[in-house]
Image 1: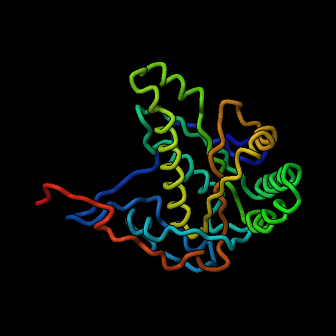
Image 2 (image 1 turned 90 degrees about the vertical axis):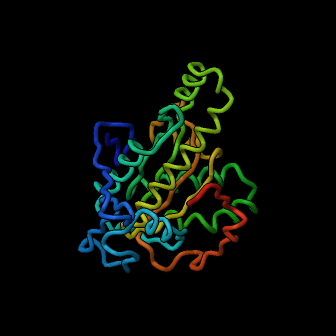
Length: 250
């Protein structure tokens, strides 16, 4: 559903996100990770088709972004819809919601965020925060991630044994949605960074973009065509032995 240039991506019957298993033990390939090379002059950071884990390994934070996209708006909408339809949630609660802001609607959102911060923060703190805002505004789009508190409470009432667990499960599924969409956008040649300027901006954005009151803002995902490399090109990893235990392997 399109409203004033943005997409409120609620579940629909669209089910195009299919996984194909190739022969032998080769990894599953996702049609979500096919790059239409003729749509972008940006440096391509991946092969035409990547396995899920290859795309996940390439996912990085990009701050230097332009007001351009490597893919059509319809493809961006498709990625978000597919993620919302297919990302798991506890008891199939489907609590995650998203608002996609593209082009000028994205620019408007960051103008509003700057306005709110200027009104509510002391001058010194605003000046510090304002060093980052132009970079976010210069990008092409923003995805606002929400959780539907009403739906979560309904599941808490339905499954009282797990009532205290649902808030945590809600956060987990929101994070999974963010990861799936971030990885998919990166696979299409877009740069992405994730911000958390809520709760100061919640009311202003909800008013502007007609967001239901039961939706609680969790994160803002900024994306656009990269103009330089990732913020941390060579990511450091803690020893896997400290983070993984395996029992019973053959």
